[in-house]
Image (tube, rainbow, N blue to C red):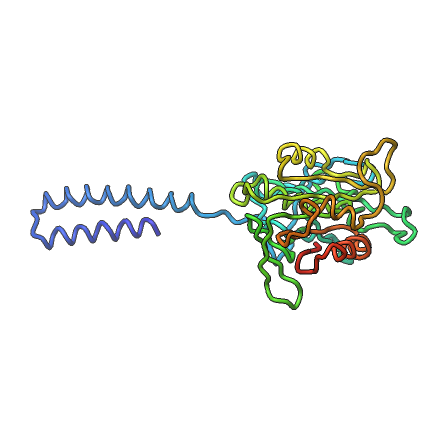
Length: 329
């Protein structure tokens, strides 16, 4: 296409010069000179447009694609960090903040098994995507004797094995500067904003919180200097606290803007955090800014359904919040 444009442009210049009555030997010199200028300009524009063309992101919202496991790390007795390579080292994930990814494999009976997870990395980390996932092993919990099919399958993967992924998907998209949208089933898209985000996470429910925290404090175009956040993080034991170093680094780096607090079901001796289930007092002390419902706080939650239903929501209602002021991933 570029050669056709150049040929057409040179012919047009030649016809123009001839129509003006310019002598032939001068005409050809001018055609060559002007043609050279046109060629250089078009070539420069061609490569500029090519280089500026946005590369397609890794995720496809409609089709599952295989992604290769390149690293696996044990974070605790039942939690792993999985790193998968994207198609190229420069490829970005293409996952809006607040969204998640569906993973799929086919089990030994030929049935598809599909689960959704929020990665701990996003478009700020080209070439790879990282998940922190709790492994639900068989024979551990009497209510779930077979354990988790997907998590056990992921734990069985060897380096260079693949898992199919599709995305993005989800109901919340963080836009930056405290603004985000929520799209619940059978409801119109809702625009919300907050000056403060109160976060409640249980176990691996920390991953969407970490995603939003990265956006608030770290990621260029979405980061700002005004939005504040607090995180109440519930776990069974101290060893179960995921991405602890990263969270505590945030608390150190942004002492006036980010507050971090833990509660444990089975705390060790000398534990200085909270103990037991999330309640109204914890919400006031560690989720709301200055312990008050100021009307500019949005609460984000992610964790086991019983924690959300029986601990978080009743406590939020007790401090005067309604469902327009919270969102559960």
